Amino acid sequence: MPMPQPLSLSDSQLSSIMDAARPLQVHQRDGFLRDIATELAALPVIGDGALHRIITMVQRRHFDAPDLRVHESRSRAYP
Image: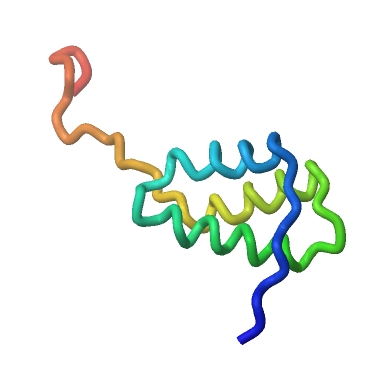
């Protein structure tokens, strides 16, 4: 299997990717980063706009929003 071509990212681009991975559960981060790398490898040029679109698309695949619903009412005024 041939080695994948390394990606060339600026410090701010790499920070954007890592910041996007932070809200994910620890076990989801590896898949997120692999999917980001796969999507970026398909681009001829990695610009900030393209990176943002890919981060948004891939993060939606991996992010499971927490269930913040409360099963019990917090106030007697609002049953």
